Length: 443
Image 1: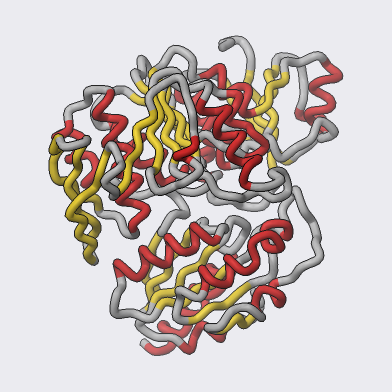
Image 2: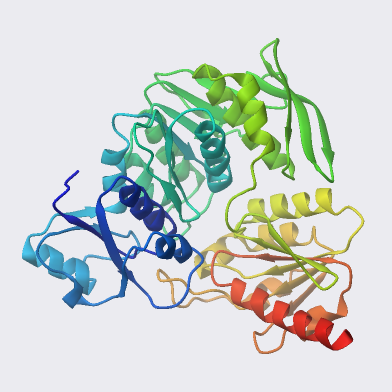
């Protein structure tokens, strides 16, 4: 680390990039960056930290910078290209993160789904007990002086997590995703196996995942779940409209009863993984119990608000497994309400690869609406449309357009779940505006 340089982030609004920028800022380093001018949910933290954010422009690059390049941008990006031509130090995001975690008790949270929620929960719990730095994939990052722990989200996309070598790893699942990069489930497994080989103290893995059960490592692998074969078990689970409660056992040793104000079976499992890590780091379990009670969640994961008589939930779910988990959580918290899903498919390759799974997952809602497919920076078009998915939906499937969200006005005292990893929030805002104006008229 260098106090004389300015760390300049190309793509600073990226969810991991903004977190990393905040960590360096907290540590007292000079930070700046560039990105699109469109508002994103990650930029509020950058604004509050008064980190300068500029529109992309090669003229931003000058002597005295250390450039950290977001993984969405190729070396042909004008700023990255100029930095290399000038001979400035240039790191890729994951390379820099790999160096940053050295010297701490580091815990990487990996998995096709559940990374952000679990990283957020673990960061919250450990921060309440010991100095902890953390990088969460919702744009939240904190660099704590003299930190004991460094908790970070370990992203499997393009095998980026292989640039990091943590003390511990939590692995929530192995699932086929990112079909624009991975060939098949065996290719994904190979990436996780390589990551497992880089862990130095221990791995905590979900016991019901058959691929995680195939892992081999030079360190102990502890499985968590609800089965008799799991090392850490959640027993006597009670799921209510207030959250979830369960007993925890390590083999036959009772570790106490825990309550989390979270919904869905996946959040019981995430909590169990956090308790397991804390147990092996000899953190006081009563303190863990207290910290779990006060967790408020992470950005864009089951984020709720009330508008008029409707409950609106915003969630990042963009894979069938995540959609199932989010709808399960909605059913737990609102068992007596109608659940309407509004889903923005994300990337053409993912829709093609997982079409039938998407339909099955979405059919867990009472009614389903779709938006057009979000075309990401990686894919601007493809040979599939939302209409193709809509044909497989048995509970609706109407395509919503931003300029006409009125079909959602037919529902009252219900729950609308907006899901997607693109810009589904603009549909959400349009619906909220409609609701707000109508309720004003009614008053």
